[in-house]
Length: 561
Image: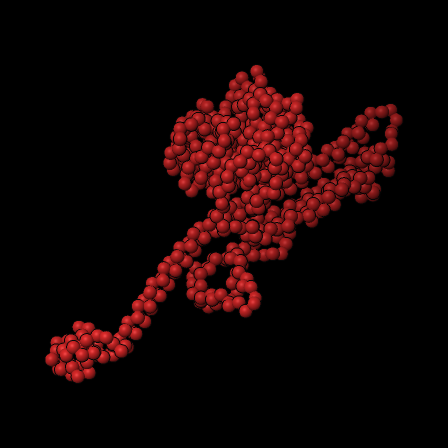
């Protein structure tokens, strides 16, 4: 029962007219409708009026909440797409580096095998030539082929060596294209999560798996798919092949005296192909939680490494000059471990790299004069390994690890050096590879997209690029703002450069770099390798460990050595 009063007779009102929200009783409603013709009247029961008003209020509130939820959902999707884009580009870049490394290793093995077989054949022939100088004919497999020759013409007609090389150029474009499966689509069909059966857990789907419940007929024109071929890659079918080199010495009438194992070895190596990683298997969408920095020497430096970070261990290393100790910082666990080696002294102005296989390579340095010492530390045994010295004595140089090689670049020995040499981690042999166009003291170098970039120096502002296939350095049109020491890091598809108080970004191809902001004024100088994890870069400069935030562009001091 309503407690409102009628606006005319003051009795209990049962009705309400929406012309002016006037409360009326059943006796006064007629007079109200006849007196006020200027308004549109729609009388209704007070109970119904308040019920409808309450329902509309609830519906309006519900629509507002749904709109807010949709806005939040779409905003989160935008952020996740941006994260997915970055991770996808990183994975494709890692696949390219992995493929290039495999190609370089395969080509080098093939070239070494061909070179070895040719040298063996030459050695056999030279031995036969040496035996011809003796007074009497000696028994020799090569010379025995001429036993049935009766005249010089028979000798000239005899086929001594069978030589053949067949090459099939692989279609790398199709191979790489078929090795990547990328699917991104927006559908208008709503995907309603299935209601779990009572007593059964609701299993959440993985975002990386395609949803087969989506209707393909309602797909928008925002679909981009690269086909996947999970069968044997085209590279395995059309790889460079060497055939018919097996018979080194042969003739039409005599059996070959030597059969090369080249074909069998090569076929064996071709059949052993690395297993293809599942697409986006290790992609993590969660944000990295910050970790506190602690000093600890109790934890093993061989702690488990986060997946999908790098082929290298997540360590930053610093060698204390003129001492027998060095420290290792675990980026994942945020702790330090100090290693002390008896009867060893590390030199000033040396360089070091963290290499694949869990090794640290430290080279050269200064001890009253430049040295050629090489120190190798293996994480698995926590011990030093033997290694030959560099071909050139140097200090104040740059060093970069790329694949199975360690490159030592430039430096100083009475003059600024142009020489570049690399260490093969498979046989631990040094070999000269190319040379800089200009000598550089305290240069900075980094590996980016399978190439080496060398920048600056104390008296240089130019930048050079080293092609690992042609083994040649080329000067680039892009130059630093001034000739000075700097730090250079590779991340995603960009190169970050810190020099003085400025921060630059460069794609490695443009003729100029972009200044993206300012940093604290320092004499930035890269010491050892940097390490990129999530949105942070860890690096050492001026005997201090820094952390660079790629989002806030803020540099934080982690520890001063």
